[in-house]
Amino acid sequence: MRLRPHRRTAVAGFTLVEVLVALMVMAIMAVMAWQGVDGIVRARDSNQDRLERSLRLNSVLSQWEQDLAAVQETAVVPSALSFDGASLRLVRRAPGGLQLVVWSLLPDSGSAQAGSNTWLRWAGPAVTTTGGLQDSWLRSQQFQGNEPGQLRTLTGVAQWQVYYFVGNTWSNAQSTGNVELPPPGTVAPTKIALPSGVRLVLSFAPDSGQSGSLIRDIPLLP
Image (cartoon, rainbow, N blue to C red):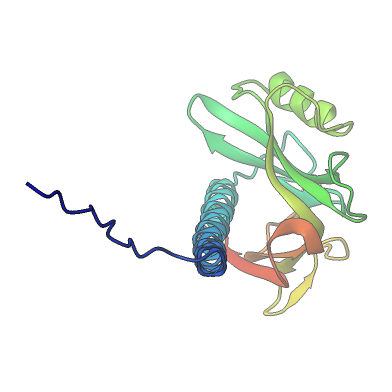
């Protein structure tokens, strides 16, 4: 019996050039896919940051409106609402008595951007005595921003302005002297009447994530 010689079957394969081309195409596709995923993640993070800043801003403005809506006139302190350019002081109704609240703008030491400030809110304890309210008023005259009870509400604020609505017009709160004279024939002390409304203007620093200025008008109920 004669044996036939075994023939090897030729196996088709890829050349080195074809393998390198395929690897290059796969690498390009991987880079493109990564760039797409990275862009989606960056857009998501940016949208999340904007949403958080908007929610924070709305929450702070809501507290600002609540404070102004609860302003209570009293003869214990010089004025139930006063603004000196750096701080706004107000006396408001609170559970348990009257409360002194201070809104102030102080330099932000944690920001490298020049002109960036932090908007702070300090609320004193609710009191029911004349001495307690006067004590809170005196303490607020030396407000430093690190007092117990102070809250960092907003950062990245460049400046703020406050206007009062008096006599059917808006006037700078620092130059508005809405003095209410006592009735003729009485010896009551001179009283500074509350305005009909308060306008807040906030200007934001370039690195704050906010743009332009924000204007909010709040009417004061009689």
